[in-house]
Length: 258
Image (cartoon, rainbow, N blue to C red):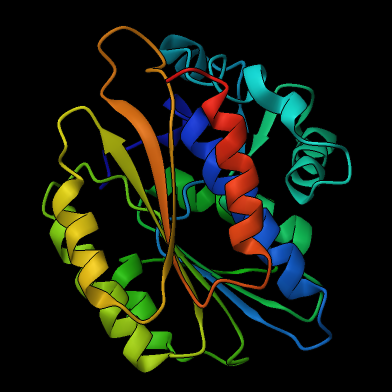
């Protein structure tokens, strides 16, 4: 969706949930000596400036990472990604998921990123010149390159859901990719909304089976009238210990009193 700009939402509580558990998964996967492939279908940019007018306008980062960063000790892989972003972009920098991944991947790992917005593609290429960056439809790219080489790896699917049909069609993508790449770690993010628009997606995901695990957290809306009140992650082939990390993070979210 070319109108979507994640800078308005970077560092919100959904990002905290998603990026902390993405980091936990990649940290475990990278501890093993075999190389891996990391793929994203909706990459955005690698680095965000939380002092930008767009981020300040919504206040989502102030209600998000600025509020809860103390949850993560300096040895947590998400904290390492935050430090890497600030070392590169200054005190107000925040890592998008490509930079979270770059922090944890190794030189012999492969990174394949898809993004359609021209400005975001340009930012990705500047920040991650060694990655394979495609100005292309992410779901189509994922279907075309899976199973990848190296075969061991992860796919992150993180749509904006501005196109309402994505709540239905994205489950078809996950099923198709899983059939093509049964050993891949597949991670799908979805919002939890006051409208309940995500419920059909959740029902369809439950019907896919295959031993997937889900992490859902709730939180107060970032501002009056804001429709997102939670965040969900659905994961196939979750790495060892991921469910424990997800449970620990969910307990922290419950302290917010949503």
